[in-house]
Image 1 (cartoon, rainbow, N blue to C red):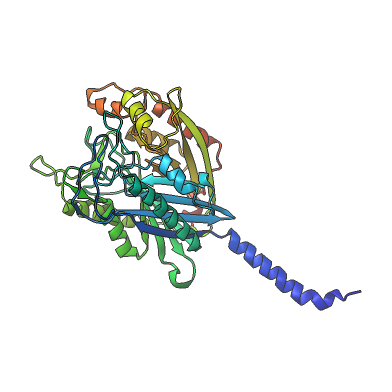
Image 2: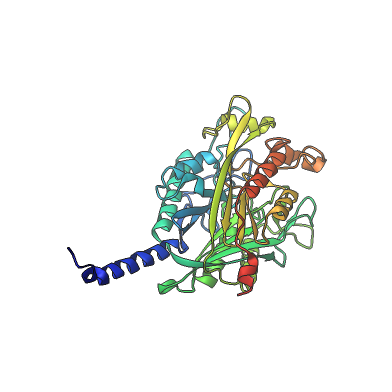
Length: 433
């Protein structure tokens, strides 16, 4: 019979090792990576429905950026691309290339710059498109590479999270100047050891704004104000930056108004607004308490929307991208809820008007509420049934919306996600430390 006491030191060491590994697997890990996707040579840029406009100069670089979080064996990826919108037809192709994260745990949004190549493959009146499909194929691969690199770079981290009003001349509502959301949400991941100890790995900024300072009529390819925002955050934190748009529909745009009634539509104005938004985001973050053991949760579901707009039906049926439309005039897409520490995130597959955004945030069980617009899909404007086709001012956004019930269905489904999900971490827990 073996003497068990002879093996007790080895057994003790083994148990300690297993306990240590178990603790490490429970700790939050974060990784981040990016890829440049500026086309070379330059190609036409799209500011919306219609034929893209030629470009012959660039201001800044287009990028795709990925942030991956891991906790207790579950991973979430938050991804954004410099484009007007990124349909699920393209995002799903990227998700199929990722082996380390379930597809439903990957959310892909667009910055909504109006100076990037056409990713919708908008058809003309004859049903033909001028989109560069080879470029879109390449972007699909670059996005997958960024996500996979972020997975490979995962390291132990803690978070700082905040939501507050940004100050200064950044955004306004073109239709009704004061009807916009001035709140900016920030999630920053910092390393816990090694070269990145207490240094930012990635800073996520969530704010509702149309990056259309330059637009697509000046023959300029550009990330618009988001490029300078990224540069400013990186220069001040030495970590990567990632922007997720919010409920900026109808028509929350960059405040580039001049005193003479005209607008500043140049790269210098992009720098001014991008730098100011970056500085304000970091100001808000300066008082945020470290969240050393943040919990994480993700839940997604498929939602079906009727397609009432003739224009939207024509685009979805005639684009060479597979849109998933059905014969009965409906389309399906995913919505997602994320709990990350004290933050709760809801995704919106398009451009929700600010009243919808305010309502959703009011119903979310935290003061750290985040809305990721143009995420998982990008179906144009999302209005309430009361606003749909109700005002002359809303004629364009009604025409470029799926239909009257889109907002109603979206809000109902998102509230159901909230009600069926656990609460995010308590803000009081961290504010008291």
